[in-house]
Image (cartoon, rainbow, N blue to C red; front, side):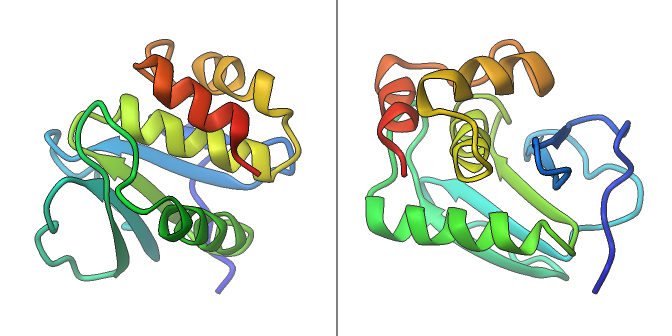
Length: 142
């Protein structure tokens, strides 16, 4: 596939490599088309079924992933797929867990861990990454 998001669409983060990833809060209605090719859902409980390929990481609200290795593998998959597919990363509100995951994708894309939260706050949402432990998770992510 060679599908990507519209770079100016709401919630779409452009990584330094040019990869585009849409961040979203599931409490909000699904945006108009296009739909994702792949979605990474970061929730404390299993998400509802969707019509596109998805992966779930158990990640309670305001916390960190239950399994750090599983989360790292899922984030790497999302980053790799974002090169040629429409990838969405979502949690309930679209700020804390989603922002943390997007910051980790920025690290994978070459942004230093100590700068990734600021990058996501500037280019995605100013309130992204909500807790000190989420910020530390991003700094240590590799």
